[in-house]
Length: 376
Image (cartoon, rainbow, N blue to C red; front, top):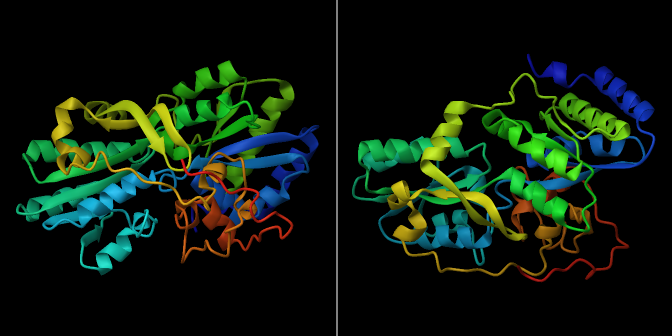
C-alpha cells in the first residue's frame, strides 16, 4: 500500500537488525508504551528477531485494557436504565465487567450503540431529545481532544441530554509510577507517536533527565519500531538520556496547540484508577467544574459503585510488564478472545490478544498458581 510499504521493507528491516547487533554490547530492556506498537512487535515477530540481550517489555498503553472494572460496571448500570442510549467505540463492547459485558447487555435489550466519534453521540442526542445519551469516553491523550470537543459542542448547542462517562488516563504519570517501582527493569522507553502528535514531547524531557532513561518517540510500522529501538540502544550505549523523535513525519516537540487548548478547557488533571494497577495520583482527566453537568457518573449517581477483579486474571502484571501473557495460568484456556477474563485478551491493542493472535503458547512448566494475583 502506498505510503505504508516503505515502512515494511524486509531488506531495510534486516539492515536495521544487523546494525542493532553491531551497536549493542550488553543486555538492554526497553518498554514500548503503546498497545498498537506491541501488536506490531508481536505480529511481525520483531521481539523474537532482536539481538540476544535486547528485551522488549510490553507497557500499559492499551486504553481499553486500563479502563477500570468499576467504570465498565458503571457504564452497564447506566445502559440498563430505561430511556438511556449508551454509546462508545466497538472495542469496548466485549470488555468484561464484573458479571457481563456491554454486548451481552445489548442482546438483552439495552440500547447500546457503536459510534465512530463522540460527535456521533452528540448528533444522536440532538435527534433524540427525550432520551439520555451517554458516551463512554476512554483512552489516553490521543482521544481526549475529540471527547473535549464533543462536550464543548454539546454546551454550545445547549444539550441537556448528553453526558460523558470519563475514564481518561495520561502517559507520563504511568511512566514515572513504573520507574519509581524498585523492581522496575525498564532502561528506555518507546513513546507512543499518536499521543505525542497531540501533546508533543516536552513533558517527557524531565522524565528522561530525572530517571536517566532515553525516551524515543516512535511510530507504529515495523521499520518505525526497529529504528526507535536502535535509537534507544545507541543512547544507552553512549550514556545519553534524552528525548529523540523517530516519528518526525507526524510529531513535533510542541504537539498540537489547538487540541491541547480544547482538552484544557473541558478537562482537568485528577487521580485516576487503572485496571489491574490501582489508583495513580494525577494520572487522568476529569471534567472541569464548568462542564460538570456533562459528567454521567454524577448525573446517574453511580460514583459509589465499586468492583473486584477476577483473581485469576494477571492483567496488572501484564500491563506493567512484570509478566508476559504466556505466564498466566488462564492464558489460552479459561481466558481466550471469546471468553476473556480481562481486557488485555479482548482489546485490539491488548498484549494478551497480540500474543494469542500470533499463536504464542504458554510454557507448560509454569506453575499453575505462580502468578495468581489478589484483586486490586
